Image (cartoon, rainbow, N blue to C red; front, side, top):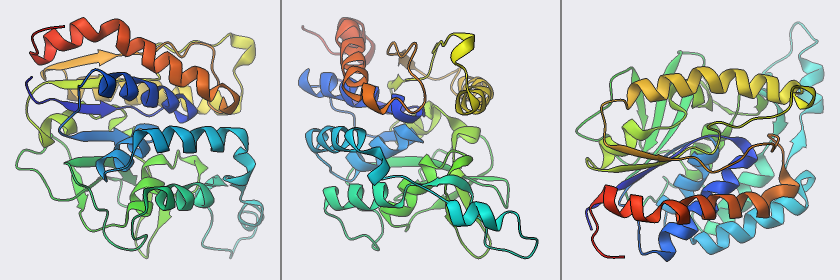
Length: 292
């Protein structure tokens, strides 16, 4: 089998489909040599790149989906500060994911303040909205860097990298420093196939959990309006970045699921698993593996 890398898209709770897709790949003996991810895909890429168990990640996701309010809290105080002219620092999102990230890092069992212990090449995409510059969390800058203006964070703790890549602007709180604010990198590269290729030049298997997602007009609310508007632009940018690369894209059917479909976690995992199982012959041909 030729080595291949994996690119994982953003998509909120739709990212649960990434877990099923990976379960199907691993069960078929297909393990990537590098991970690149943004937002929900960044959470999965960062966790697995640090040597985490997929089974434990699925179990953690199921726990969170049953009691999401335990892991995500509303920035009530921060929202009130927005109304005060001299207040600050202000929140960068309506919701704080700090408990979710803290417990996820604890599940992995890594030092929460040490640099992220990625055991395979890994890249998580974020965006510095102060410098208006894309940020890549990775262990070391690769020899080949995709076109664009990139800044590297090579010694950040895993929790900071995970928080930044998932911080959908205005929705989840990001990572703040003295001269930077890091949020979800979807605006820079929502499906980072170019970074997967940069980490491991060769076939790139991309999983896009938000591609082709449809919802009836009457069910489009504030969150969907924001996320789908951003998704349109960022998906176009990502396709342009990877148009000349050897990429095979799988799009699990996430039609009808809202951004916060916690109750549908198990169904979404199954959708991802079935999407990969249906494409296994084509995937094997694409990455050059013979046999069944």
